[in-house]
Length: 56
Figure: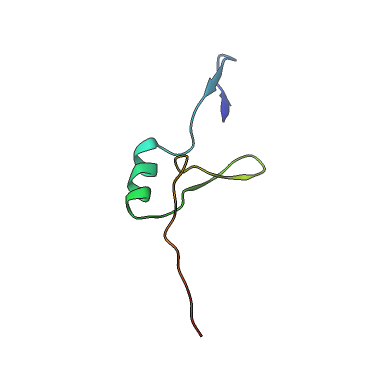
């Protein structure tokens, strides 16, 4: 994601801190970040989230 600074320069930044992603992955959770128009999964490549099965 890019942010325009007051002096007109563009700065690339990440909307989710790397430490947040690592902590969520320890808990087997997906990390989803909201962008300008889309949501994006931010977990590491190859990450497998915990599966929840509901039985009725």
